[in-house]
Length: 79
Image 1 (tube, rainbow, N blue to C red):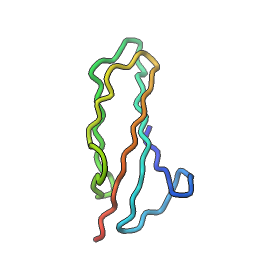
Image 2: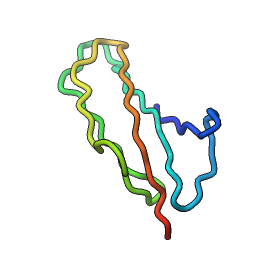
Image 3: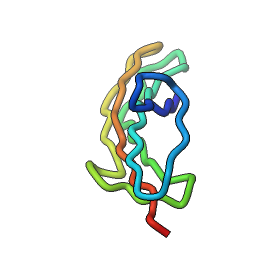
Image 4: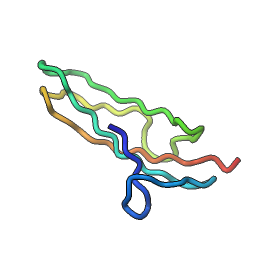
């Protein structure tokens, strides 16, 4: 699940050029077995660039139904 967190705490926002968007990403093991060596890689879907933090995340091992969250910060290009 990937959710945009707007500055006012809502889950939707209109992003202007040069704006910074913060996404909370939750990775969940929906299987019935332990998932090992889980990784998450984020790609910008609005022609933005990742401006803070890594673009790949080592989630590790997830038990069935276990979730972990990461935060991604995205900068919207000026042009």
